[in-house]
Amino acid sequence: MLEIFQYGFMQRALAAGMMIAIICSAVGTFIVLKRLSMIGDGLAHIALGGVALGLFLNVYPVISALLFSVVSALGISRLRKTEVRGDVAIAIFFSAGLAVAVILLSLANGFNVNLFSYLFGSILTVDETDLQIILVLGTLTVGAIILFYKELVYLTFDEESAMVSGIPVDKLNNALFVLTAITVVISIKIVGVLLVSSLLVVPTATSLLIAGNFKETILFSIMFAVFSVAAGLISSYYFNIATGGAIVFVTIILFVMVLFYKNTKGVS
Amino acid sequence: MDEKIIEITNINFDSEGISVLEDINLVISRGDFLGIIGPNGSGKTTLLKIMLRLIKPKSGTVKLFGEDIHQFKDWHKIGYVAQHAINFDPNFPLSVFEVVSMGRFSKKGLLKKLDKKDFEIIEYALETVGMKEYRNKRIGALSGGEKQRVFIARALASEPELLILDEPTAGVDVRVQKEFYDFLERLNKERKITLVLVTHDIGTVTSRVGKLACMNKKLFPECHPAEFFTGVPIEGMKAIHHLHGE
Picture 1 (tube, rainbow over the protein chains, first blue to last red):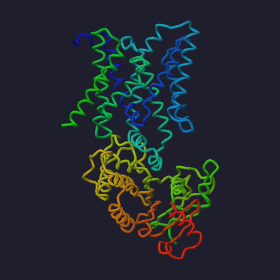
Picture 2: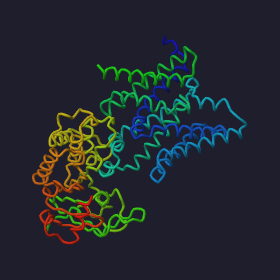
Picture 3: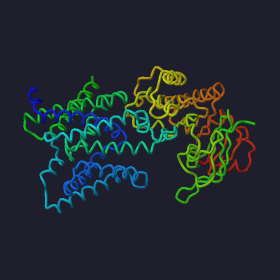
Picture 4: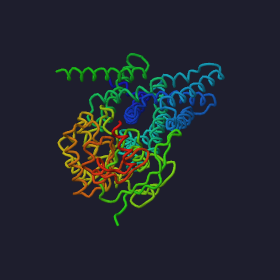
């Protein structure tokens, strides 16, 4: 069965997929627990605007997508501190990103095959540049989370007390939003705009069903995500189905299985 | 002269044009056990939040440990248990130990990991509140009173010189409340921790704290428990009427 990993494109796909799985679940744990599950979806659609601009101007779309979503992440972070609620702030930026994408598409005279690969993800076309970007930004993201782990846990649980104990809550919140934006953009190539937030949210949701503390939550979430990416990748190859869809479908199956396990265990 | 731990001068605060705090002046000295009582909406929590730099006042100044609040850096000297601390998401995946360890973060500073000494202090804080055997339990699985003790352990883990408690007995039954005040008394007398406690419940608190201040937009300091039910200054009386009218 492992002969499929003899192919270079499969090796790159697996390497990229594993990195994405780890980053998404690490960042996703904080996002889900801050009750900001929809931010991944919002930032992904904003990134689509950036991708469209990149394709339109003929620059590497990941760069323009990063610019769009990082700036928007800071904007959302700022807006939710005013009278605008967090979910509304996300919706506003989400709409703006999508509007830009649609306008640019119409200017470019309709859909473009390349854009489709960002919309639905195409793990099998991951090239060396993509892999390097994922590696660099992914390491940066995981590194930042490890460095500020204890402060991030504190402010995720109890922002007010974290503030009183002198933790720079606003700065770290901004940093977390920027890390989420980076995570979303580098994951788009793998699972696509439409499914990226699933990879951010579902493994953590599954992990929360059984984890007893914070460390376990992150650890289990990473395990579920890594397994989903591997299983999704392999099955997409053998059944000739879209990789992003296959990966997310596996995460959902895991969620249902763990939920079922927990409930039957609870009854007995 | 007693060392001033908190010095509040001429604090005013408005919310959407409505006055919440009017010309508050208050000095808390080292070793005090101060209870601030007042009805709901009398501005008690707002005052605490101003003391903790969570809210900016419209005017006036706050000094903590002799230093202007904007220059103050030693936040680990202050332990704070918020009003609705125990009303968090019950499924939040944190063990009791993880919650209490947060109390060490301010002393530790950014980028530094907790070490053996920190863990000893965390264990000691857990022991102080009698929650050591619960250390690996999920925080959401505890009862209201147990959660409250964990949050106090978290505040104690920073080895504070000042402990600020906002409605700490809300949702805790009367029997536990008595034990709780005994416990606070010990912290105050044996560990010399300065205590500030805010509550709208005038039952037990009046007989247990060292000093009592009444609050209703304005602060009436030194309304002593004994005076409370007998001859009281007119201003203090107004505040009491508000309390009973609740």
